[in-house]
Image (cartoon, rainbow, N blue to C red; front, side, top):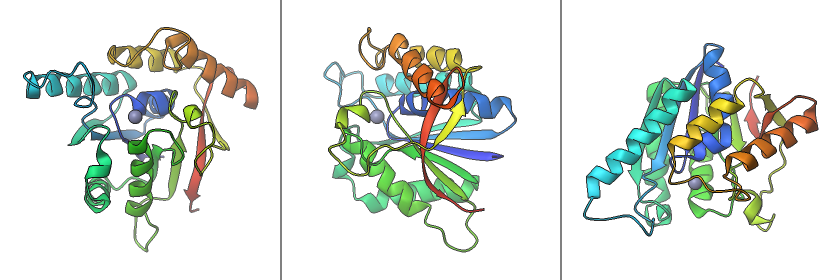
Length: 227
Ligand SMILES: [Zn+2]
């Protein structure tokens, strides 16, 4: 895994889904690039339109700060409409991802899970699958889907595909970096028992870790791997 691309719908999904794994891979020498599709802010009830670009810039700065904590090589926020990605032709989203793949040539892609409650996550999954379709000469050899606390489990398995992880990264050494990176998005963190609270994020990591015999883990679905 020399060059890795993490695709997220919103700023914070990359941390919730694979923050510990990003920190581990970068510590092991991988170049991890993060692309966030939506601006993550304009749908919020407390978004002040008068603040406009300044508020968005602040949020983008947070994404870069979180990426820096995890050791990411780059963070880009593309600015699709938050919680309204269904108002954009999926072709536009797919082509935006294709441009990132063309320029970065990643071998590994992490993306959202396609059965989440959040519609932007589902669109991100579909667009990623299209953008990474395995044609001759393409760089992408493996695609993994990550879960996001308060979206994957809140679908209550009502939408296919269901989250059935079969790939686990041991993040015992980087779990606290994930928690620290998540705290950069202070507006997105919540008090326990919310799934995004530090306590719940630790509990999720410990639960997956115990399932596979390590102290903490992040869980992924294997979408596709070519060897
Ligand atoms: Zn999200």
